[in-house]
Image (cartoon, rainbow, N blue to C red; front, side, top):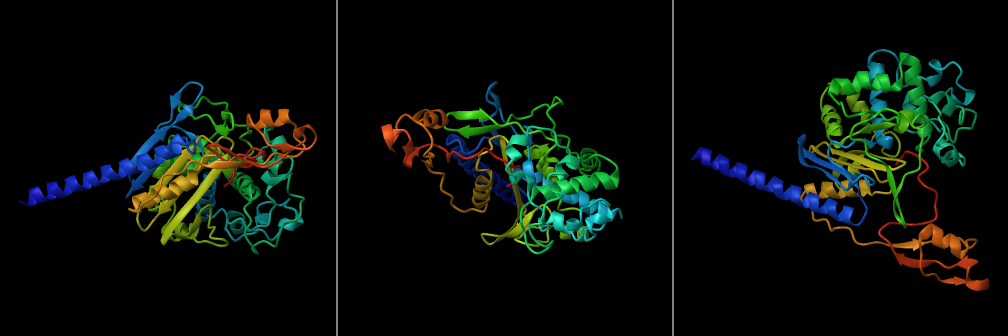
Length: 409
């Protein structure tokens, strides 16, 4: 009798898991159908995948589908790995997070004398964000190793006193990568592999450079009025420790599970990684209450890619969404998948209506070329010198704004 009861309970558990997987899958597919997502998704409970699946294409030109082994650029999810490396070096006695960085950088400018590793890790150093500079889009296709990137902002004034407030800055994490290389005498890529990736068996994760032949690497896209387009090129020496990694949903689950253990850091040091400083930002993670549950999360965005990882430690739930589509709603999708996993009802996304803001200086030909419009409302001489705002049904948000100009989210 006991065996029959256990078998019955096991059958109920399997059926419930299959039902959840089906509901999660349908929700993701709704996003895919509306071109809001294209990539791979993993939802795990207690470290065991409930859903692990690819959606859409890793390469549209060759019709290669995404799958759980597809490799995606991570963008700013890289920052949590950089934070781990800093804490590991502290455990090795090579630095202290509250040390001024000038101790390890004799040529640090006067304005940086009060900046510590802690300030860089928590985006509270006051460094201006170089990916927001006016010339960034023009220069992002040119090689710029960390030492060169530092020259772009080292002589600029700080935006505030170190530690005074939060302001997200890729400059700080590129500076962290530079310091890691100075302290260890090794490349960021080598330190990352030796101290995190190899110990965790993350064989499908690394520093993404275009030259090596990388099996299962996804191509990056952006969605515009004329459909999918190849994303703008970015030289991968630029994002470095702030956003240059690639990985898979399955490898990121290994990373997630290791953070529940002491495989990389003792618990006392690991706990510090998840202590928020300003605006809920800890060391490479955003930590806070999310709809009544503790959530540890971070997103990433880089040319052609939009990513998100969310950890709910009390419920041992993990949601990972990696998209090779830079305007994908990876964060919103991850949030809704978590709610579904918690048993809540979530409505599928609705077809959106976008507002096109057309500059007055544009001609009819420019509007047609940029948006592919076939009808307009206009005013002024000949009706083509100024355009009024009009509503057009599109499956994405559209405006004449520059392409993604940074690798942060």
